[in-house]
Image (cartoon, rainbow, N blue to C red; front, side, top):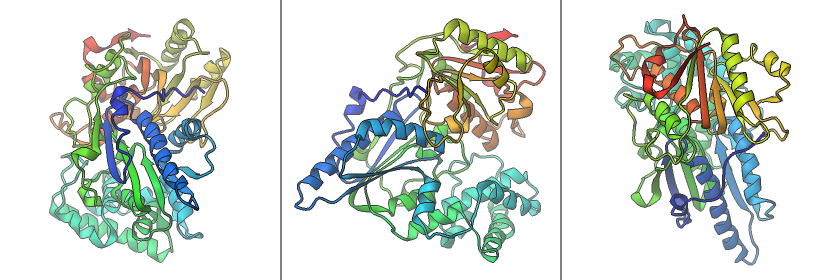
Length: 469
């Protein structure tokens, strides 16, 4: 599978590499602005700085380097590119992991870890007293547990709900009920059953330093919780250099934090925003930006910038018709327009449903690979990938195809159409926009004619080519 990132630095990125001293650096940028490329180049620059410093010592010590990603697919992608950058440097001890895998390896062995699905189901089961949607209650509880340390949970009562939108509202009585009837019983249940969850591992590492890293790079850190960031910061060696790369406009999980609350003071000299869109065509970037219109962005968010895109291309396609007909259009498009020896194609779906697609790919003898959850980047010649939208975060492909985006599959309608920041709906819009933003050359979306998703109200007619199939 082709890994697309060009690791030749641009002028905008070169300006960041003069800052190789100790401390925390924040790099922001919209989809397509080269954040992951910048993270890799920053990693190479920092590693060289610390290696040279070690070599000046009489007895050089190993330089511990940590690269963290949110999911395994992005981890495999970055691992492939990072190995190209650092090669086999004997003084480097390099770890490239997802946060959960890294944390599990650092804490004491033998812990019984409650997996994410079981944790969410348990929280939903405790939600009945709230008289709110159980999914929302579980996500709100998860957000609170990930943002505050256990001894500070009561701070939630008066805190701004960073990154959670304005609807549904959570006034102080509702917050107290969430603590009393959901969060505290959940904590007691884990204690009684001798269980921990993934947030508990972050809390443990936030309290205890287990390893010392000289260089830390965290990619897609908008989807890390405050406790996970605290855990990372607590594993720094003296005079370490730590780089967080993020864009909260692409946040697809119910979590957020501010830098001061995790102990980071952001100064102008240690904070940068990448402006130029190197990946998307202007047409793709404008389509993605329309999906985010009206959403509130915090200081860590950047709207896709179509004015700064450096290439032009076709308008995205929006298909309406039955799923087999959507598949037929997409495969004809590949046959007529895509050289699969040179270009990559990703079929993305929110739930990873590809049963109607795979037989047609096989019939046409199109080699394909499943990327979702892959620990290593595929080495074979297949340039068609099937992937969930969540697992595509941080990746890029020449062509993006998202079929079966039916309302019954992806809709999360706000209770009031005037409420743009209804968090479940806003998160879906960020997810679809993130998927669109993976594309370099073309985008195809499709849904059933009689089951249109709510997000089509953000598809301005001049921004796409409509096709009935």
